[in-house]
Amino acid sequence: MSVTMDSLPDTVLVARAQAEDRDAYAALVRRYQDVAFRTALVITRDASDAEDAVQTALTKAWLHLDRFRIDAPFRPWLLRIVANEAKNTRLATHRRTGRHVPETVLDVVSSAAPEPVDIAAASETSAWLLRHLDRLRDDDRLVIASRYLLELSEEEMANVLGCARGTVKSRLSRAMTRLRDQIDMDQRDRREVAR
Amino acid sequence: MRPDDQLLRDLEGLRAEVTFPTTPDFANRIADFLPPRADQALPRRRRVFVTLPRPLAVFAVVTLLILLAMIATMAIPPARESVARWLHIDLPGIRIERVHDGGEQDHVLPSSLGGSLSLGTPVSLEGVNDLLASPLLAPSTALVGEPTAIWQRNDGETISLLYPPSATLPEIGETGIGMLLMRVQPGSDDTMLFVKKSFGVEPPVSVLIEGREGWWIVDGQLTVQPEGMFPPMTRASGHVLIWWDGNDVAWRMESALSKEEAIGIASSLAPLELGAGNRDTGPAVWVDDDAGTMRSLLQVVSLAGPVKEGSHVSTIVYHRGCGSARSRRRCARHRRRIWHRAAGCSG
Image 1 (cartoon, rainbow over the protein chains, first blue to last red):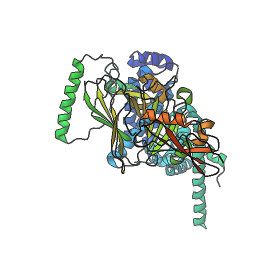
Image 2 (image 1 turned 180 degrees about the vertical axis):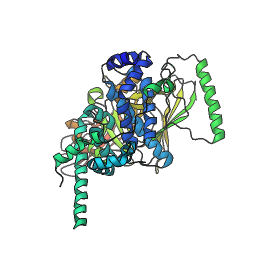
Image 3 (image 1 turned 60 degrees about the vertical axis):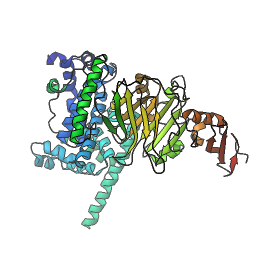
Image 4 (image 1 turned 180 degrees about the horizontal axis):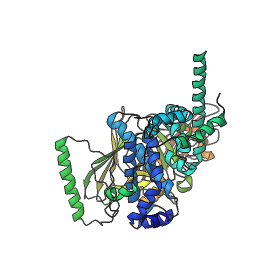
């Protein structure tokens, strides 16, 4: 099943899934589950919450697939549902437990590595950047992470951010400005301490 | 100072250097969690909750089972859209309640939307955008035209946009209104500004609007919660689409449209831009306590006539008894108040 099904284009798989072909839907899920999970992870910043969010999003996408336009790209549509569900999950977790942003992006990605210490040593710049990303406000962190960590297209970023496609660039630009300002301020502070 | 191109290079190298947790194998597990589509069982939803004490919860479950049995015996088509199976849903600032099922409601649109609408105070688009962190979104003007008036209530917690009937927006019953769109963003998580009660033979239907979850309700009534000196207000409502943007904003669209048409319009939200005529003056309407129906609002607007360049409407009072409208206008240049129906600035 898998070899044949996995080689089919999205449009064919979507058409089959719309006709209740679960194998076709499984092939679509297999194709995009990595990016879906990572998107949810960046938003919820908790692997367990991200898993819950993706599973719920996949269920919703399945239930509403009959209304999906066959000529539209599937991945952005799915990512929009995943992102919204991840935001729901994050908010629900916060409301239920009072826990807000349980882990940092750095925690999430480095704890997944087999040897977190090695990663920190091998990519000091990346760890440094992630620490700065963690200090940004949620909106700025999400737009930068969508572009550079998830490597999403502009259309997908718009779906994940919940904004018009035309405003993605300006939001990214503003977030980058704030990241630069933060880095500059941090470096100025370090120089003054060193002096 | 870190050179910008160096920062970009570092960011572009980020993906290759971080390791995400292993993705769970959802594809091989879908048999465990995908419901049959014909059954349309709702997925688990964290924000749908019934907060009742245990005895009441048991009673509620029994009542719900009876209701479901009643639905089954009413021979409702099995392939119907997914339906709500809950007692209430809380969205930001809006609670949707199912009051009962199988009542005498017959989907007739209301002939009036009630008395005072409690929409708040009139505001220009510029004024709204000053209140909000980002530009006000509204449906594509190509689909629904421009709103006739905008109100805000409680520092922008509720923004209401009123649209007149048009070729694409049929009149809601005989109310004289094509669509009322409300943006609801409560100041705190627990604030409920509106309660939407659904009753009748059609239960609320779960829908997706650009991936965002929403509810389609074909009848029922709306209660605006009390605020300060204002008492609660309840009125009948047209067909309503309610959805949540995934953050802290809920939207409520009231119209006489079909579900598909309403979803299409809701999917077209983009920053609102008004034409030159509306942009400068801002649609500003004040409704007196005695004449708050939507028909009255539209009559007020039409009676007031176009606003002359250089002035803006600050207040319009509509008198239902005699049918006349008087506008109090303040000239932006001369700061002079003029009491005259549809008068412009005389300098």
